Length: 211
Image (tube, rainbow, N blue to C red; front, top):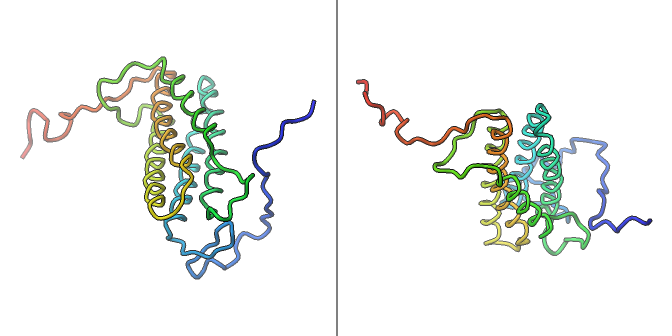
């Protein structure tokens, strides 16, 4: 039985030297070879996606500490690969994109939607917003969610100036929702109560205000 064709090319890189000194002038290279400032919006986009990937790596380590959370750890690992694919396409100008270059597609978006529905099904309906915490994995997934939202905002800003694959924005939007649901599911599976937002827990809402 022959293998089905791979949708994307495998990496064609060789990291023998880690530093090249080419970035000392404050510029970096896109996949097509173009030199651009390191603070360019496109660089900020895939740099934030890389930051998100790092936080998900921390969250996955925390998930693996609990056998009941292993299924989610496997999902998170897949998402880490998908984020690298997203970074690949964001690091490439549209004119230089290869047909088999790694990217996120509607397949990844639809898979996230199925996982949002599946992980959300056993959770109680919310009557207030939730605060991050209760478990380390919950807090780390919430941190990843906020970074994902920032990546999405940056990508929306880039889309006003340059061509951006719509699936990239769709993916980050769904992923932020997924991270919120997964964070709740973690506490649910570990039987840890959620911390609901209580506006009057603020200092100004206390019964007795100290001078």
